[in-house]
Structures are given as structure tokens and as C-alpha cells.
Image (cartoon, rainbow, N blue to C red; front, side, top):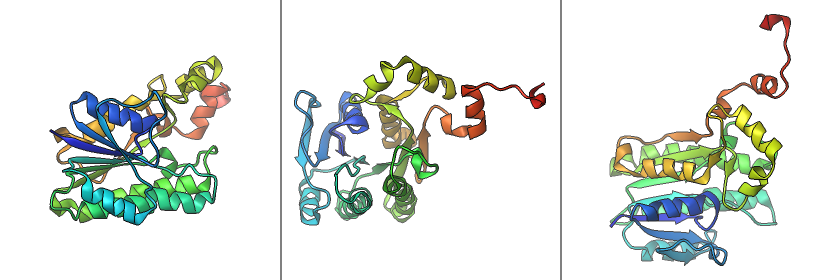
Length: 245
């Protein structure tokens, strides 16, 4: 049976990825700092409670996990302390430590997927500098490990979503008709993406259908970031000028 490990799989996109793997018949292991909220557990999965910033705990986890086919990194810093140091440790250092530990095993994973963001390439005002730099770093880790692990038959890819409807936060958008309508207007595909949309891309990258794909960051945003800012402004506030005649 295929075994997929989801790091940061207790909520949001991570939980959707775990469910997607479970729906496909995988043995699923969710790794997180805490267990999922009561009543939200994903069925047919194993949970490991690990502080990813604690190197001895990470090493022990990597030693005890059974054979792994896929590993997906979705963790991010959510603490109240120094967000710069926290994001660096949680997103970058922890990812590096797990990748290098797992790929030294005699049975390394065949596919690794890391969650980046459109904020790796553009600025979003609702996230701090640490988030932007962390996600840009993840994108570079994807490229670095795709090259250095390729000869071992390990594929490494990334996914970069934009604002996504998640189970925990979707009501903010779905119950605000004006906000939802705005997103539907500026996204070329005419709707907001869901956590399952992102999970499906992760599933593809981990599958044999992507057997010759490595080192890529797949943007999952319905085409929104393809547009120039002026075009978006004109969609929101239509203004006709002499050049449009």
C-alpha cells in the first residue's frame, strides 16, 4: 500500500491533502505539533505529534516511520513570538532537516511536495515579511533538492496557491456576497479555489502521471496572478478612456 506522510496536516489545505490521499486508498500519516481539533479527525490515518523545531524528536520520527512513498510539507509558523525566527525555523530549517533525514534512509520517499505560495513572487499585504521570505525559500528548496536528489530517483515539486477556501475560514467568504463576488470577478476561472483544488494538484505531483516532472512550482490560483494590477483595477472600477475607444 502507498504510504503518504503529510506534515502540517491537521487543518486547512493539509487536512484536505490527507483526506485526498485517504480517499485514494493510501496509508496516511499526519505529522503536526498537536492533534487536530476534536471532531475534525481524518479517518484511517496515523498521527505523530512532533515539534518540528526539536531536532532530536524529528530524527526519532524519521527513524520510526514505516516506508514512505510521498511526503508533503505544509507546516508554517503560527506562534506569537518572533515571527521571523519562527517562520525560518518552522518552514525552512525543519523542512531541510526532515528531507535530509528521510532521503538518507535505505527506503527514501519517491516524491516530495512542498507548499509555497503566490506570495513567494508578489506581495500580499495581509502577511508579514517573514511569510513572504519563507515561501520564497521553500520555492528555492524545491529547485535545489530536485537537482541534488534527482539521481536518486526522488522527485521534488512545489505548489503555490493564492487565497483558498478552507474548511476553517470559508464562511468568511461564502457569507460575504460582496467579497465573494469580487473574487469571482477578478479570477479568470470565475470562482475561488478550494483546499481540495490544491490537494488534487499535490495528488497529481505525487502520482506516476507526474513521473518525469521535478523542480516545478505549480501555481493554483485560477489564473489571477497572470493579470497586471491595472487590469484588475479596471475590472473593479470600470473607467473608459480615450484609448479604449
